Image (cartoon, rainbow, N blue to C red; front, top):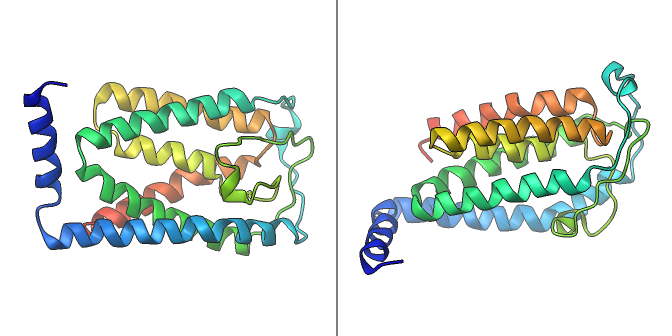
Length: 210
């Protein structure tokens, strides 16, 4: 990276957080995300230990169950890296993304607490050592409504700005949604509800000017 490019990058960060309010928003958002991450293992253990209902899902009943963990996480982490690169060069994205993620996490805590489900028939465990911490390094099967993996993909899509990036993110989100159903990790409603709820959280974040 040339000196000119480094200077422009530095100016981008200075401009993105040139007021105390902007810096406070980023700081508070970061603290809340760290707190949420540390709450997650205990919360998901509680979800896993309760009884729920098994839904009659017509689509899952007609889909074969396969372990597609590798492509699911290859796509998710690949898009995550792309998002980090774009945010590195346009840091103003960071605050909005963090706060939208906070609201999505709160919505998931509420929905998971209220909608008590047992896993779909034919579920194939989804294993990812990189995100195992969030689940307390335990196999979690009742993290169902609504889909966190789909939520991640939709959040990335909403925050990417280049047309080519958005096309890639849109296709990647659809593929992940389909693969989650192939693995029978989620009910169809879990996957379909996620984009709607995430979009609402995103619009709420923008309305608050975060």
